[in-house]
Length: 538
Image (cartoon, rainbow, N blue to C red; front, top):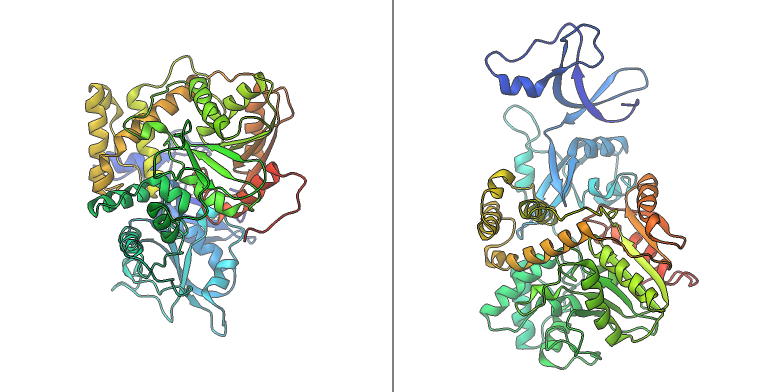
C-alpha cells in the first residue's frame, strides 16, 4: 500500500512459524505464501491488524480487520472510520459501532471523547469526515466524558451497541385529527420503531423502504385498513394517505394508486403530480418496486410530474413478461396513455435501466422525440447466450435482499439448491430468509411474488440484445471517474448518439438514499432541465 493508506498488516521474514500445531484450517487462513520472499516455501503471517505507514517509516496501529460490519451491502472497516476521526484532531477517543434500531435497520454510530479544551457539537466532528465515502460516514455521533471499559481495560463495544441513543431535536409532530389518522399513526410508529410520529412526517425520511411498506400494509390489513404499498409511495405522509383513502385529497388529478388503477395504466405510480414541465417516467429495478424513486421525486425541484413504473407482477392478476423488449412495449402503452406524444423523459435504476433504454429505442424507432434518457448505475449489458439458472437467480435475490436490509448474506448452498425441483428451491430460499430474519415474518409470504419479478427481470436483462438508439443518453454511475468511463465504454456500442457518464456519490444500493440522494437529485435535474438555473427543492 502507498504510505499513509490503511491496509492489513502481514509479517514476513525468518520469524514467522509454519502454522498452528494440529490446526490445518486456521493455518491455511493465517499463514500464506510470501510473494516477496526469495526462499522457496516461505510464509507470511496474516495478523488481522489494520495499520498505515507514517512518513518516518513507522507503523501506526488502527484496529482490527475483524472490526467490520456490512451496511447496505457494503463491508465497512470501522477502524478506518475511527482513524479518520482521530485525524481531525478533535477527539481523544473514538469507537464506531453498528447500532441496530428497533425496526432492524443498521446504522453506524460514532462514540467520542473530546480532547481537553475542545468544545464542539458531535455533528461538527462528523462534518470533518466529508472526504470519506458515504458508506463510511456514521449517521450519528454521541459525545461521552469517558467510554465504557471491559474488565481487561478495552473499550466495551457491546455496551456501546446496546446503549440507548439520545434523541435528536426535531419539530413538534403534528397530531392526528381523525380516527383514520390516529390508526395510521399507531401503525407507522409500530413498524418504523419511532415514537411521536406526526401526520406530516415523511415515511421515507423516517427510514421507510419498500420492505417496511409491505410490513405496514400487512399490519393495516389486521385493522381492516385498505392500505397498499403504491398508495404509500405516492402520498408518503399519514395525512396525505388518509385523505387519499377517504377520497378527500384535493390534489388528486389521476386515480389514486391504492384505488382501482388508472384506466390503461395499472403500472404507473404518480409520485408527484404537480409541475408544468414534461413528465419524468422511471422504470422499477429488479425487485419490481417503485419505492426507491419516492425519495428522489421529493428531492427534485418541483418542475414536472414524476411517475414510476411498479411491476404488475407484484399483483396476483399481473401479467408475466419475461423479455426486456416485451416489457418495454407493455410499459410504453401505459406511458403513452398518460402522455401520447413526445418529447419524452425516461429513466431507470439498476436492471430498470435496460427497460428504460429499450423504451427509448422503441420510441425513436417510431419517430418520437426523446429529450432525456437517464440511467442510474446501469450494468453493462452482458448479452449472454442463455439466462442464468434458477438457483443462480435465487442466490442473487438473497444477496440483494440482504443488501437492502443492511445485513450479511445468509449462507446458501447453490449446489444443494440445484438438486431440488423449482418450487422446492423457492421454498428453501424463503426458509433461509425466515431463519436469518432478513424481513419480518408477516411479509415473508409476499416475497414469492417479488422473487418471480426479480427472476424475470434478471433473466431478461442477461440475454437482452439492446436495440440501436440514436437519442441522448446519460449514465449516472455510483463510483469514481474511472468507473464512469468504463461504464460509458460498455454502453457506447448501443447508441449512435453522444452518450455521457458522470460519477455520483453513494453505492449501488445507497445512491437513492440520503446523504447521496442530494447530489443525485441535482445531477438528474441537470439532465432533465439542462438550461435551467439550479432550484432548491422547497
